[in-house]
Length: 97
Image 1 (cartoon, rainbow, N blue to C red):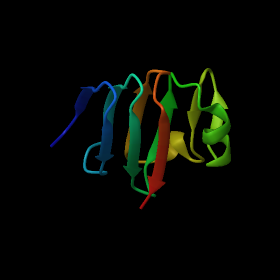
Image 2: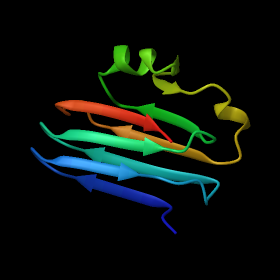
Image 3: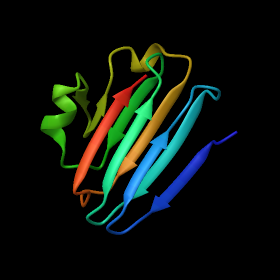
Image 4: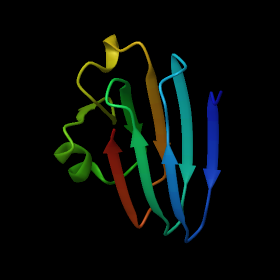
């Protein structure tokens, strides 16, 4: 079971689907000029930090807190996904399943 993941991919396409089997999963993604599609379960707490896609994250319903963006109920969910992104992604897509 995945607990921590670090991905570095320059000018690529990254597709990452995460689950809710562990209480916390930490993901670090570096993608100079890459496209990122991230899929996360509906019933997990999500925190995204380190990105300049703040307008997009706001449209998704994530709220800014201390320089990161979290979903509603982040503090009370049994499972959490913590994502640290660099600010060089060409595009970012976060889908809830």
